[in-house]
Image 1 (cartoon, rainbow, N blue to C red):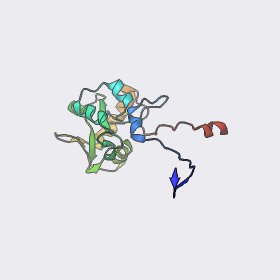
Image 2 (cartoon, rainbow, N blue to C red; image 1 turned 45 degrees about the vertical axis):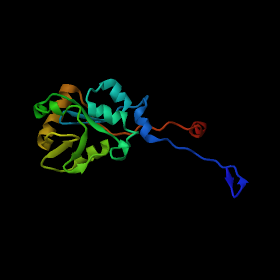
Image 3 (cartoon, rainbow, N blue to C red; image 1 turned 45 degrees about the horizontal axis):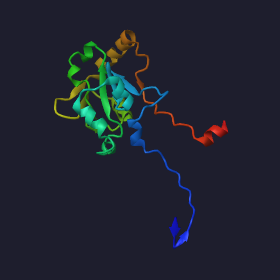
Image 4 (spheres, rainbow, N blue to C red; image 1 turned 90 degrees about the horizontal axis):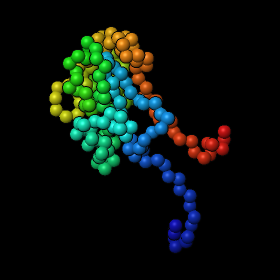
Length: 178
């Protein structure tokens, strides 16, 4: 580079542009999820799109325009209700499948961790608003607790959630240390 008309040599370390990671395949990474009352919530990623094959136009839009429209600024992770494990507590919730979570009890859900924190709070009920029109999804924590035990036995849901971030790839410097 030139500074004050003098050539200089500088080193510059470039980091990862994280929004693009959601548009790439992840290998050897356990999926991140929350199972709450038989409802399965997951962040939108390329691997999820490949496996789930969503037909919902809103999900396709959020995925296709995640970077271009800077959706990542408001939703660093787009959290989706991907599946419903049938249970008496969620019998009438099928229309919410493939919906994008916007807020829980008035708190914005920007990432999967936000959803886990919202469900961990003490509340008489959880009012889950999805992006778009339609009534909110309302969950009773007492009913959810009973559904948890049924999910463990019926569907072999051993762990209710995996919030672990993707492990970072080792750098050449890390490889020489081992």
